Image (cartoon, rainbow, N blue to C red; front, side, top):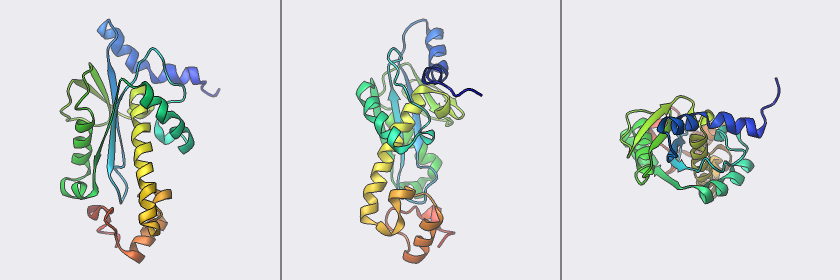
Length: 208
């Protein structure tokens, strides 16, 4: 199977956005929302809402999980510079423990989209949201939608940068490499040192 070219990838990643534009019969503002950090044992869940122009696409945008850290860092400033709207929202570990991770994710998604004055928002796999305009929930949206993929990159870069900073404060947990996820080394450090203020108590109660 031939490898997908950058042009082919952009074509595939903008099918949903182009369909929405054609249905509207005019150029509309479409944003994407994605989250990073639902699964980690430590740190915040971060969501991003991003609206980019479809007239000038950024090559390389894809699901953040498919990109190297270097590539995400290269794309991040391009996305921020060209975005008609870009906002992140963070829900911290204490609130995640209090309201659970799904509700925390929904709250963050609603917060990051609160200032968007466009037409449609594409959301990665979450429904039951109160957003400022109509939205579509798309399963595996970060691999199918240009806007959601851009949002996934913004959220991932900002959260990863934060967890690297926290590694300097709490070097024993390896946050710079594991970003708070439950790697074997992280779990062993938890058992050895106990939790720090970044740990989600509801996530680690059966580990220590």
